[in-house]
Length: 277
Length: 351
Image: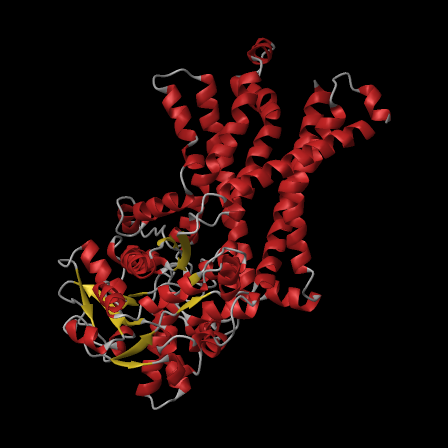
């Protein structure tokens, strides 16, 4: 009740009620179902399922390919967002729209076209193969697919922040004698960091659970290029619903921990910049 | 917060009534003489059942005067079975392997466990087998199963863990090796291990493997169903590919069944049974043969003799006892297929 007094805007109760209801319907209930299914197995069964060599191999593969893709996106996405916000050039709207393409494209289509491009006989893969670099059907191929689908997350979270960034702050830094590099590192970057972390986290979370595009380019070789979601599919194919949810629960916990840590980092860096200002 | 939760209840009520109205709208619009049937099938049967549905609708109209419209759903066989378990209201299922229909009985009790005895020929009205698809002119000279394990040959087949079709490929190879080595299981296992050591990519489904082999030109031989090999040649060009028939292969029986719990609810048992029985008639068999499935009826088989070459075929029951058995020993987690990969010393490192 005490909360009500503080709010000047009307409709707090209704909107909060609706938010909680909606989140329960869309997010919490499916998750609860997932956990309750896993609860049907004993701890030993659960442990046996998630610690089998193939499952462990797929966890590591999914984890490091998703992290690599998200890191790559964080760097390149920052560059793209910077160029799109700070410079003016012909066909800028078109380039801006291109960024969203990985959102719009069905993931299977993305997977098939990337595989065609990067297989050893493909237009790009052919040349890479000459230098001994194989992309399709290797972990590198998985990283390529995950980078593709994750790019918009970084660009779209950074763009509004960059737009809001006051140019005057940079001018102030310059007038106080900071070099261009120095003002980028100490003035611009700290302001971008929270959004960059969010973009990284979203890109990672999306990549970690991605199935559609990866199965085409990964080659699905046991112990080498089987991603975690594929193992869930193989369990389902045996009608082993509980085994599938066991892997899903672990994936969920990993994702949640990652997102939570990154949110914490974002919160910490926001606090740091605001207290410094 | 009391007023707020009252309002929340109202919005919940609104939502529920909205959903109910939508449900009513969807379930309306059917009259007595219009009957519908949902056939849940697997991927490559799309064209086959498009023709069957037209022929059956005509036949049913002549017999009963009722108009019947048949809806189709296609996807991977296992995925389709799970959809039915999870509530997709399929009157009939026409899947790639008996194991997937067994699951409807064992996991959701949708039909009796003895479903396969209800229709003739193990409930499989048409059959197929596993053949080899090679590049035009057969540059690597592939004649039989033994050629697939030679060094330097690349074999393309989907992952048996995710693809029902790939399980038939695997079992065909196993059955061949077993027959050749007088039933020695260890020899069969070595053969399978050598075969999969020659597989560079395991796509998740049969269509994916066909793309890998035909479009990306990876591999020397593609293992697959005879009817799909014909389809691939028709679609992608007889100037690029040709079929090689091995000496021995497996009798692939894609089974059909009506789903008791659902036809009871839809009051469509008569229609569903008639639909499936139609597959065994002269007309049904002829349509199946036209779509490159081997017909069961002798008279129709005689007409298409030159299309289907004589391959010595063994059935799942002969070699493996049953699908359940084969699945358990070979494809379940920890089964022989997993062992040949987890046993990492046995595989040459490709990287």
